[in-house]
Length: 241
Image (tube, rainbow, N blue to C red; front, side):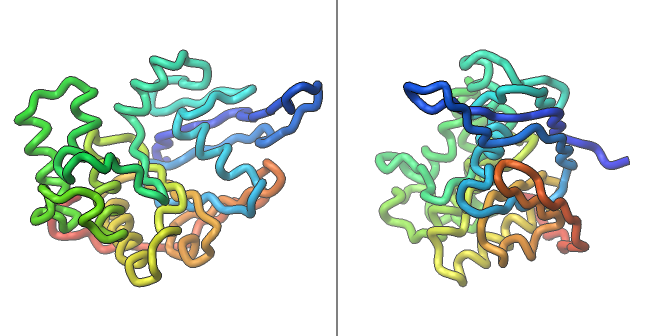
């Protein structure tokens, strides 16, 4: 049986409109298993609940009800400090707008998550250099984000997301700010990661992204309306990312 890296049971998220007693169900109770090494797209129109689900998966928010097992730990109701540690250790994020620190070089941006994890400098340097090389940025370590193209900045984000060997990699519209050719290159990197066993989950409205994934979960009005697996095989690269 495939190994679930994340298990959601009865997860929901309800918001109360400010100054009223009116409640809005952004995400209705759902059960979901995310499989280790699978390439999953979470899709839906604006207001479907996909961003809410991503925030819960990324431990950026807490569910109103239900349990969320990330690896061997229920993270649904942990305090802020513990959730911050969980995010650092178990989750990698790739954002549409990159979220790089403009004053830092590529190498320094890559090292930030490990710095907060207390890793010694030589360990941070070697890990960051290795990941930069794997995404084709070995010659850009001393550059700052403003000296990079959009595609190069997104490669930095992908490398940064992998720096602590996360259980899952979450991408929020990771190709949304890129031209089509560069977007294809970024999706190719995700496919290499999946071929090497990384669990990649992309939140997207782009059907072309969904077509390349192994599983497509569609949400509408806060509920899962379809969950389809499609056969996709990705050749394993010569060197692991």
